[in-house]
Length: 132
Image (cartoon, rainbow, N blue to C red; front, top):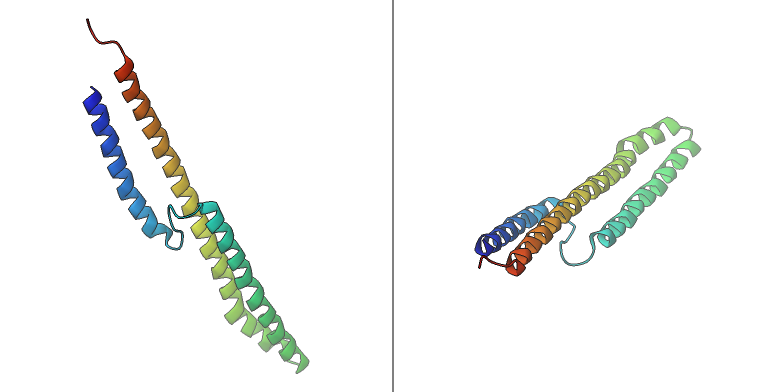
């Protein structure tokens, strides 16, 4: 019985290593096991804010430049074509990364719960009195 439980633990760990490699590919820029995922997401959120603010400032400059020369419609077109998608895709990329990180953390929590349950079951079989 104890042998079966230890085999279950090793099988569970090997499946998790495989899943973690897959998650490493899916998460891309997030490095697993290096530093807390929340810290990495906070850094990417700050970067996304920068990717929003800098193009927004440049967009306002283009809009004001074309407005000064009496063609705000051209300025709005340039802003809508070049800068709005840049800002939009930066935030969409961050949100996608955030959702994937949350899914990974959820799966890792389920794995840790399974490991605790399996280890507890193994410990209970070790301490359980055998037939006399």
